[in-house]
Amino acid sequence: MKQPTESCVKQTRSIIRRFSDAFNAFYFRIGKRILDITIAAAGIFILSPLFVLITGILWFNTNGRPFFCQSRPGLNEKIFIIFKFRTLIGSDENGDEMMRLSRVGNMLRRLSLDELPQLWNVLKGDMSLIGPRPLLPEYIDLYNPEQRIRHSVLPGITGWAQVSGRNAISWEAKFEFDSWYVQNRSFSLDMNILLLTFIRVFKHTDSTCCFERFKGNSDLLQKENACKTDSAGIF
Image 1 (spheres, rainbow, N blue to C red):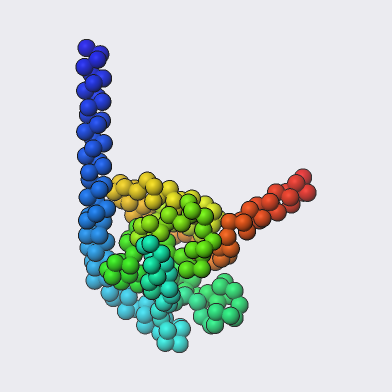
Image 2 (image 1 turned 120 degrees about the vertical axis):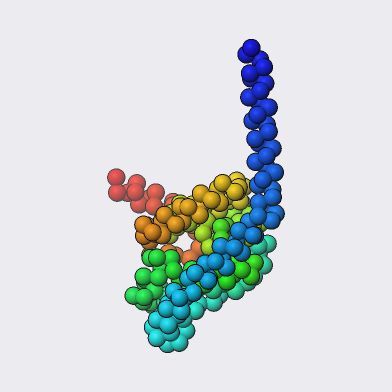
């Protein structure tokens, strides 16, 4: 009786695995885009009063420039224009980000409302709801091969790195989370990320702190070695 039971279990697992693989293949070929369009369109419609309210407040807070537009690399490193609500005031050359972060901008970042205009990017097909965050174009040449695979999928409004620490983790950790997502993405993982995103937003667990720009992997190693040297000197 033992052998048929084991054989049955193996067959059942094999069927489940094949079904899961087929479902995930359908999801990433068609289903994810349908989900993106549906949620983005519904979000824009339902949140349109909030869009108008935030735009009006920022119009006065930023001297008539409520939106922030910037070039970012997307799928296969193709450049597109990303949209955000403007959270910084003054010139880019005047002071660091924390000095330029307005009260309204700080609130928008804390509630992740500054990312809402990216629903237009999702509708356009530049982005997905879930994927690695689109970073600056000048970072591309600084990536190692493993980090560069983050551009083999559409960038997202939220992603595995965002629900795993966002600004509180290092660049190296963010890239590791992004690479892991690309290599292990599935429908269930996307739904998990979406759920965790809503939880983090409603709990206000994300930090609004500004972080240093990515300067390359050699820079990270130098910083780590410097920290180790300092620690050795202290103890």
